[in-house]
Length: 128
Image (cartoon, rainbow, N blue to C red):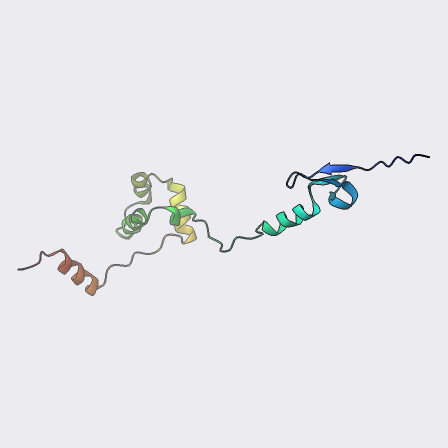
């Protein structure tokens, strides 16, 4: 009497070994994974679920360069119309108003007396 065993096997894509489907592979839905169980587990541990440190994406007014932000804040302080500011910096008028309404554009803080005195002394040439 001759017994013929029908054994289903599959080649692992990572380790290139032929293994039995029932014992060597995880089943997902109606089909088997492409990696054998040891390779699949190794891949799972290598995968990082969350980044180590979340970096908040800059949006809106804070996305503009710092120099442009300072100029816009100063222009608002000296009461230039928003339409003119929008044209000057190539920003949509409605966007500029939206930023102002949401409070994304901070108020201008004029330099203190000490800061003004320090800036004057730095600009003067050194006396020999």
